[in-house]
Length: 162
Image (tube, rainbow, N blue to C red; front, side, top):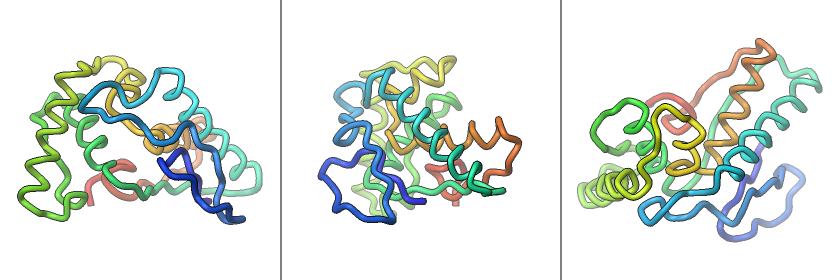
């Protein structure tokens, strides 16, 4: 299942695409919160509902993945908050270009300074420096855990470094 949780430009309708946009892309995390707390909850609930639908239809395994632009920056900001580590960025997302990496690290650093996400409140972290697609992935993972169904994590944004 491929789901659109909210890209900036409208996508062409397709039978293969589940359209469930939370908004027209998240906001610039270097200038303020990515989304409201309510939008973060909506993204999680939407992801969980999609997973529940697949499980009710007979799925016995959930797999996460994503495709996006700039979401390694958001995932890197989340990782820095949750680990207490220095801001960095996944080189896969920046295609290992030195200038791009430096610009993205600066964006993560600025996002953390501007938003001050609370590491003890995962929803606060998601709302301030995450993305709609990351919220959707959280919902899929939580639904899998609630139903005791294995969840495969693919990629840095979805849960692990490649």
